[in-house]
Length: 321
Length: 296
Image (tube, rainbow over the protein chains, first blue to last red):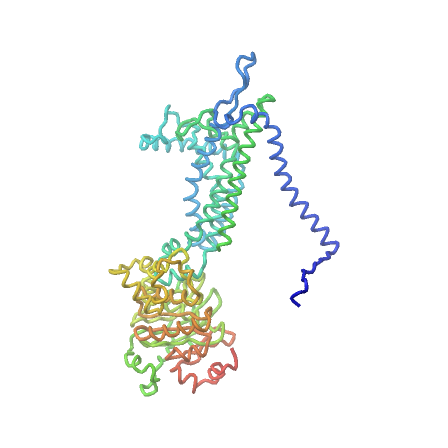
């Protein structure tokens, strides 16, 4: 017996025609979306390659964005440093403002709100998520900005000694702070939705255990729900961050585009890769167009990375649950 | 049976329950093993009067009156869906955490209705502890943090936490096994150890009553035995109510038994008596059929 060579039998699955057709159909759909992603990446790389070759690493470190002079006296120079920093600054402000708010909303919906109100609020939040970003931009410019400028002044007068809140010139219009505040509202629904989903899966038996030990609701949330939902919160935040990094038109309307690295968030100096591309695209010559493609690739890879990290973290938290 | 209506949020005040007299057993009928304990029983302890429970419109439990004498073990038995777990959860106001649930009747704890308007429900739960079906230590905490979690949650001060930790783990019969790894995660223990850890966690608040909801249903026979020993030990100093599906377990650990049954409608208490009587000479034929395994 033990001498006989045993090899596993080949198992053959014969599929029916309808199964084959459907399989082909869904496979095509799935491959198509991956292909589109790859093609976009390849297109941007192909069109922007010359820029990376010409400017090398200084494309990332320089803040100058200048087309060649018509008389040939100065060559073109392109660098995305200011815009890249601007993107990150604005997105960070958005996330910092949105996360505590989203956590409260998620906890309220899941553990405090009456069923009917909860359903109403959830659909309202979905509605907020569906507002087109140009509407956000117009609203942000006309309604939010006048208020936010007041907040900026207050912040500046109390906390102006911190470099972050310092303003070189007392102009508070169209600052990273205002853009970040607007973005915070825009990403609130997605962070809330993901966080709420994870909070709702917090193990009931552990919540019961906390209650059984004479815990208040807040105690049970602190002991069980928040530790359990930690990675969901991080995942939701990353998804929001991805959107905040890529947001174009709303930021374009409420942020003053200046090619200068700026960490004074209340000052009227800022930028963001996406809105920069939108603003330069119309009047760009062929060479600047290539630079814009290169900038687009940088943005694309940045948001792609953030989104991948987000889904990895969310998946990990689902497995843990 | 009285006409009972559910009152939202467990504020029961309009019901006049029909009171079934508490289990009253002549002293000479008491079993020898627990004779010493039973001497100590008085009118104190825990007593349910005309308790009803609802889940939304579903009437799950009707008109249960039962007395749990101090320092005794009462087993709640009956087939699935007869309302015994629901009844257990009305005894420390855990029932009200289920959305749209309601109850009626009174639960007297040392003579005071725990559903009274001036009673703090979270405080009641520190004095009437609970251990659940599935071992549920807090995964983010180590063994010692788990045992002492209740102090933090209920905001109770303790003079000497190390002593309390050792005392609770000893009473739960777990000290010897974990004393060298108190900083290990609670989830690193076996199922039976985890359940005893949960008992230790409940003991840290020094409750007068301990409610156990099928504490051994997820455990192997060896661990079950250890938990049962723990229960018998604990009943020297506290009142214990245990829901169990296991007739042998009820016979082994309980002084009194209460048999619940649902005839399709809400679950009701069929009878309650000394465990020895319930198993040898029940007054209701359905009890006899159930304890002898003819149904359920």
